[in-house]
Image (cartoon, rainbow, N blue to C red; front, side, top):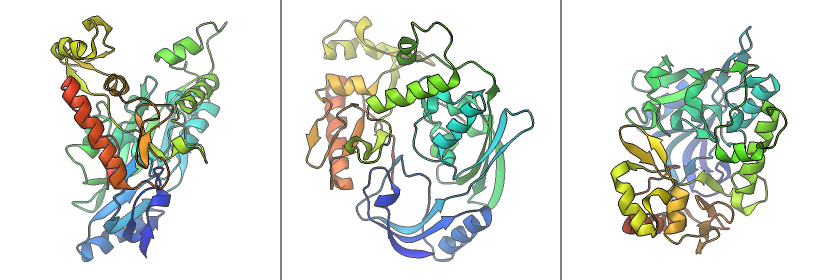
Length: 342
């Protein structure tokens, strides 16, 4: 167990103070030991993955940070089912799946972070969500200190949500995720950007071609973590796309100076619609490249807040609060932060 370890290097934001205690956890026994260390001293515990969906406070964390570095990928004989340790690199697993001609995660290429974080946020992009392929999750129940295995239905998946970040937030630490993919399956082309990319293709694109296209699109939008690029010092999309009652569209259209039919939206359940948060920001006056001190909006994607160099968590939070207040004042829609604040 290490003391006073700076957390900024372990996050894509490159922001944050130190952890009072820090340990790399390579297996379940080491995880139990870290939990016991924290409990015996009455300290809070935080499980750290790839740090790609995390904003650490400038004061750091006064408890124990257990960085999950568990490794291992096991495939079934049929070649479609995979048991993947929580510390495996997510994009590495996507590459492996595509190499094995297994469909189901090709549109999730280029997303930073580790496998253990994917069920927590129900990670999704370009028309796919991990909820479509997750068969089960193995996790440590911090109430009982026992390992449990949960099926997909028990995880309570919905848009960017699961029991792990809502009703049971803080109760479980994911140690393994089981996926079922489709051997020889066709790639997903549900997303408009991908449909346009392959509109003139003579034949259906391969999984590898779709995977590469997703990475290219993500990079063009500053959403691919590339060493040395300023736009990469971020946590990706900072705000969730809000889901609102369809009846609210008329007022939103008026505020935007548009006809109701011109407001971009996607159908959601129970008479609601999902609005693009990036569109709300742009219509509220927040252009790409907008800066507020040392924090700003990505030069390539309105939805990504970035560390322009030497930014603190307080800088990012001040920009976040300003954006939330302006968007809510103009449209009556309150944006919700996507990254975890530690």
